[in-house]
Image 1 (tube, rainbow, N blue to C red):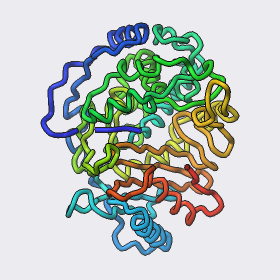
Image 2 (image 1 turned 90 degrees about the vertical axis):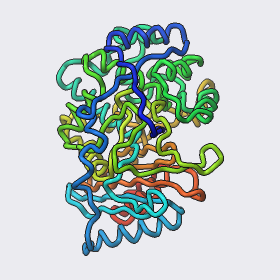
Image 3 (image 1 turned 180 degrees about the horizontal axis):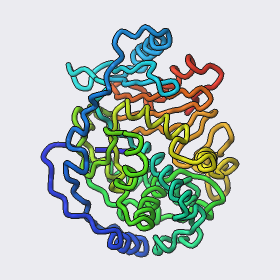
Length: 423
């Protein structure tokens, strides 16, 4: 998940260096209190500037003549109408070759949506971070089953929690995103800037759902903590680490971290009824979604390329790719006396959480949805098929990630017998 504001840019204080940030985080973990920390400003050069590369090469397919392209467009037009969506951006590739790229509907009233418009990509960052961690393991810089007390010594059960557990959501930590107290504050103050310490304080008010490693439950706190650990391990800020290891090598020029709620131009605007009134949510602050340095925006062409590369293990060894697809989560989960089945979801061969990705009937995907934005990147290795969809809402759009629904319909046509059944 994820959120964001625009308007006048404010000057932010310099972010502490990694060691200082760890001290702040550990203090907050030990005291279970909320503390205020600084966030770095990033120069236009570091961030790619307010427009990045502007999506110069992300354009709609002109006069698509391929039968598959026409079929995909027909499916998407119907889905947009059925689901009452404001906009849909899509790109489909097979073996890295474009089938179709397009954008339907409006960004704002009388402003047509375009494929090169940037949107918030939320949990797609987790797939990139997971890949970067597996690379570090390949290089012998760290082991997945290293416990985190050396990097996060103030974290309860740090001597039992491993890097693998943080990356695969098997720590037992509660999710602050479902905490009523957090949700009330977020709803009342959608422009608030959150620190990692403030976010992690919420799950640490609760007992663990289970002993680390014995079950599965989703928690955004796991990746907040994993990011802090990776910055300590490497001495490199997470946005730079991911750029060096993932987005840079893949030439995802328009996928970038943002330390402010700004979205690089051109921006796809979002709207939501989350607070009861249909309103613009484009620039609500997304800092609550994860740690600073991993709050990303992208466009549909980069999202499709990300789907291909992550889903095929392009940047990984064969062994690491197998870990990406099943890091030991299959078989975990299921309701117990201390963790309801709605929280400790059963992880099966057909549908389970991998290493920063979700695996569904062989599809490898991520599916961010928050503050009026919804997207999915999905890749089917057996057909080398990548589907990327982004969607925004009208006041009557059904609840849920409607980009998933669009992608599911496209997958049913292009890969019959291999359903992309995310829900």
